[in-house]
Length: 414
Image 1: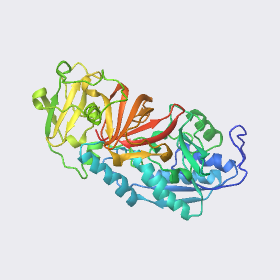
Image 2 (image 1 turned 90 degrees about the horizontal axis):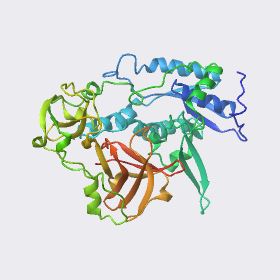
Image 3 (image 1 turned 90 degrees about the vertical axis):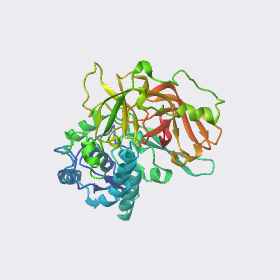
């Protein structure tokens, strides 16, 4: 195949042996194409990570079709194609974790877990067994390499150049060893350019829509999906009225002298009781819902949308508030337990008693928010300049420098 992207391709001085995780999507397809055109020794590996279609919506999770598409792309580019079934590992490390977290009333992020446990662990190990040195993916992010004072290479994870598609957040749990083996060939490109490259190169994935839903499972009816293991149990929906909301931390600011007790209080979610509000309906089980959710309750009689502001798993109660500006949706701070703190750059790790300013996001594609991190023996406390909407236990908070480097992350405990 003859094609030239002289302004995009930097020919390799020394060809590398690289495995591309080829999903059948346009991003991984172009990643493989660019590496091949650069002169590297490239192979494609398609991962099958899920069989069961229970709870998936019609037309999703068609892994057989995606595998065929990936094979066609590999043939077009002119690279060997391999297949690996990681479905059992995926079930144990990602799906079982999802069920466990929802059962506790927390909302996990399977995409972050998939990257940490599957793409850059189980899949990486399979690729290394095939004799490659690196694994490349179609993520919109970048990697930088520096040498420290000891002469050791230090790897940095950077935001992608396309601010609308930056996927560094999904890689916030990677470590130095994983980053040392990772390549992100399209991190410097914007999505329209990626599609243009695929179309002009005649890749069969050029017009394929972006995947949605749970990583490798597809778009799902979440309650139906979770009911494979979690039992339904009818409970009450209680409305908390905005004019009777008990307390807000939003007026509190930064301080270099917060005590641990003050930080714990600042990060502690408001605790509700039925007496704080009014029972307005029923639900199928508190474990099937998440903070900030506004669909799926089927409760009418309100001018504005109803949002979930708190979940009580023990009492099987969901607390809701009317309107996107309900004060119960907003919190000033969050906490990460000590064992859940992860530094992509261990050399930047904070010491107990230290505080440091970063830019933080608590969900994918959220604009970065100014915040101050406080490291204590009891965990990491993140206090935001502005109160944040729908801080959700189980999700990941990731912190960045002003230059777009993702330095660390952690699971939100409260």
